[in-house]
Length: 295
Image (cartoon, rainbow, N blue to C red; front, side, top):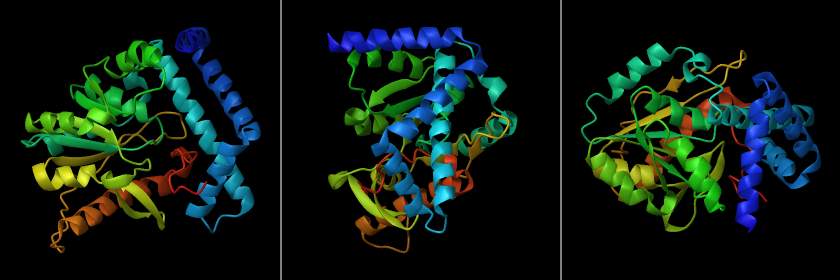
């Protein structure tokens, strides 16, 4: 009963918000984000703590302003997801520099005999990359966390993520499906910036703080040698996105002999790339996640 109530509440919310002009959708969700920032103390406290830990030189006012900006960034992302669900956004209209991006994507993956692994993060509109690539002929296996509500997952989330030819699978089945995809020379994509744990993680630095990070990408690189391609979609001041694609990461830590040390160094390399992007656009990363287990 609870699942049904949540599901229909979400459907009604998406429908009603979708009736508004696009500008009103952004305004409404930003207003909600400001209220959450002000009154939902635990998450806002964590956001400020994370930012202060990552940027110790910033003063209290700077941290406060950056924290609020990160909330508003998430509000923009949610607004755009709702607008995409309602077909009120044309992908090519909100992405700038797409020709250059697609040329680089073709260049970097044309010889990907062992497949390509797109790595990204909860940064800016992280769902946009998963829509934009298959929209332009690069479908992928998309790895995600299974939502608690199976009706929402089945009827809203999964169809949305698969609408242009992606295949959506959950983390518990991820490794088998990724290996199968790479062996076929195809694309897989995953977000690697959330805290991991247990034997599937390795502790590396992120903003000079120890962070438990998935070691799966490094393991796949060492065993199958796919193209590792970091891709992000930073949001610009005009509200549009300029895709950011790095050259394939070929690094396999040749200076180390032990496999565990190789995995640690390779994973650090991926974290360094993400950190570089977040440094440039700090308000666009998902700071309300307990990345360093500070709370």
